[in-house]
Amino acid sequence: MSKLKIAVQKSGRLNDESIDLLKSCGIHIDNGKDQLKASASNFPLDVLYLRNGDIPQYVEDGVADIAIVGENLLEETENDIETVRQLGFSKCKLSLAVPKEVDYPGVEFFEGKKIATSYPNTLKKFLAKNKVNADIHVIKGSVEIAPNIGLAEGICDLVSSGSTLFKNGLKETDLILKSQAVLVKNKNLTVEQEELLDTLLFRLDAVQKGKKSKYALMNVPNDKIEQVIQLLPGMRSPTVLPLAEEGWSSVHTVIGEGEFWEIIDQLKAAGAEGILIVPIEKMVL
Ligand SMILES: Nc1ncnc2c1ncn2[C@@H]1O[C@H](COP(=O)(O)OP(=O)(O)OP(=O)(O)O)[C@@H](O)[C@H]1O
Ligand SMILES: O=P(O)(O)OC[C@H]1O[C@H](OP(=O)(O)OP(=O)(O)O)[C@H](O)[C@@H]1O
Ligand SMILES: [Mg+2]
Image 1 (cartoon, rainbow, N blue to C red):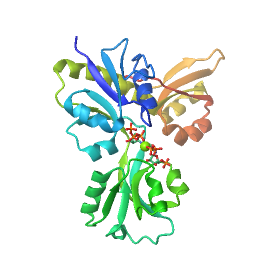
Image 2: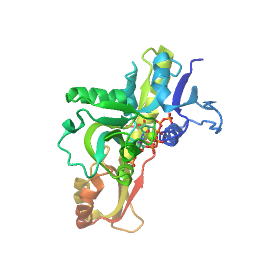
Image 3: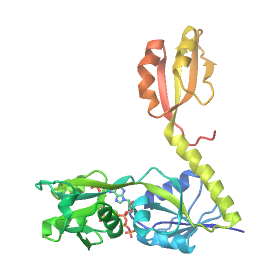
Image 4: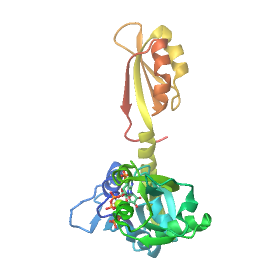
């Protein structure tokens, strides 16, 4: 029988959420800590735990069929693989930064200067596009320390909260790219593997849609139901159920995560009470 092999980061930023995502798709993985390969017990899927930086090449070579990596890594390695879904976690930016006391004139600041980074290829492309010649110094980690120890005048590294920059007395100057975790695939999957991937994507989409929506319930006097329904977006039309108390109904609907805050005041003004907003685990339209 055909199987899919998925590569996920062995340990690090992407590991937990990658495994959680598979679990939320109903896939049970025996996640023994020292195992580098595990099989799902209820889906034809093998999980390979690998170093993040090695994953794109493994997918191109077909050692893994699919994988979860950051977009930033794909831009860096330029492997010939295909992105199938953005996954919405591990959001970060790849940015240039300089010591905070520098009076920064623009990217031309870096002309003839030294920049420390773990992303030389992406940086090289960015500098070429901006017609800046700089000396790229590759270091594997703790990049933000470079200006403080006299290794470089600036850095190019990932930023999310900005706290690493702040702690090292640096300020962000130029955004090179935005990144999030993505699901990628080898370009030559068999028909059977494509079918397995479709099954996985169907589950993934249900989980993702569920995350973007909330289930809303509220009590409404019967004579206000029409007014409340007008305010509610819904998958089709809201469900209205009688309450035990005469003259009242319970109105149920699905709303977008952000939409709720926009209509809450209007719902209350229209007569809705006891409003509950609950998470949706999966959603199939
Ligand atoms: N501060 C951050 N905030 C959000 N996402 C991040 C952050 N740092 C890294 N990432 C994302 O997580 C990915 C993995 O980063 P991590 O530092 O865990 O591994 P690594 O050092 O690149 O790889 P290895 O597995 O070889 O140790 C990055 O490629 C990026 O997409
Ligand atoms: O803006 P922040 O929220 O501070 O995050 C940015 C930091 O996170 C990453 O490092 P990580 O913690 O993954 O360490 P690493 O160098 O060991 O990969 C990145 O390389 C930055 O140093
Ligand atoms: Mg890191």
